[in-house]
Image 1: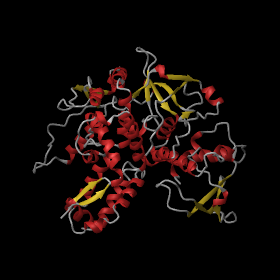
Image 2 (image 1 turned 120 degrees about the vertical axis):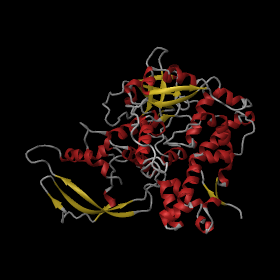
Image 3 (image 1 turned 60 degrees about the vertical axis):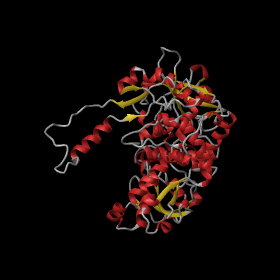
Image 4 (image 1 turned 30 degrees about the horizontal axis):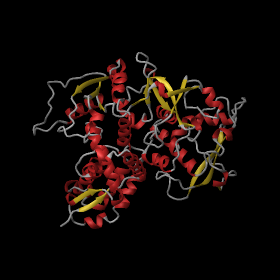
Length: 531
């Protein structure tokens, strides 16, 4: 009996990135220099989502787990599998991809029937074959030689498509970049104070590698980089590591995991961090940017908290080259498919960077989270003996500020709200600032964090029957006709939900503006409300 196919499609933005890269590589006759490699399906299975789907299917629908966890109910096990995919990374960041995967395999359970999960083969959809051929060339030319395995975060060394393309483009365009990052960052005292680094020869194969591979790998050792633990503890000799049956004890297993967590391995920054020569940058003043109508406000940063700004012209248009901040796949997909960069990313056709001395930031100590929180950044130096400088885009600054002062959910919500506002032509409508009319002491925390609800979306406001009245204010019941959202995390059709409206009274005996009083409460409660 033939095996059963389970399809894992690329998301549209991944196809778009691969398609544009294919066009550029064809113009450069890149494919002619690449020798024969294993089938593209081999690279497909090294992809993060193909390998995750395969392993999770085997876990949830494997014979033992199926009986123990789901009582033999394959439908319940399959729903759990899809739910896990949607919530990988938290905050339902992969809901759209999980829906795509379910949709691509609508009749899977019927076709599976009584067959075992071992008969299922994870494969790409036909629409993605050409994209995978390009990604296979890129991976074999560059990706597999720099594979990074993290015992906790990525034990299989799988890759993400957009990250692979960014790394390839970086090294293809600037082959000297790895040496510049090595000299300026990896060999620096600040790096050595945070990480232990071991250099080993980079094994590239049998010597039949093509010219492109050699340009990207020659003369560079493989780095094993591990964060220095804050404290080193040894397992007490008197404590057993295994039980009577020879299995690792729970206590020793927790000790091992805690030790790994305290000293994580990080990906070699020469793979992904871009060194932009100072001569390629054009200094620009904050005053000039503001006069040009540019909004430089960042939550929790004083008006002049950033002393220097600079502009950089990327070599080509497109999101593979432009240091655009990636918050999550679906939002990045909207950026790419709509050809809409976040506000503040570009000044005309150039990318705007804030400049900070790298030692004044948490960038080096937080390198493990580069792809989650710092993926817009680059570095530069005025001269060989000058301090290393971090370049940050405005969207990246705004994300990290919210992540630091609130949490990741608040940071993600801010950019999801930006997308929703753009999708409904609402970026230029009345903002919280304009509605409230406060300038002195106003904080940008509220822009695209607090949602402005038009009056026409509210009905049945019960002003004559308040739910509660106190010395500080009154609360009224109402109904909000919430419009459907654009993203998977917000769509679902128009819904009418019960809400409460609060009227804030001025404090007795003071002239305090009740709106300011409301904003103070908003700062404390903003994280609670995610529309």
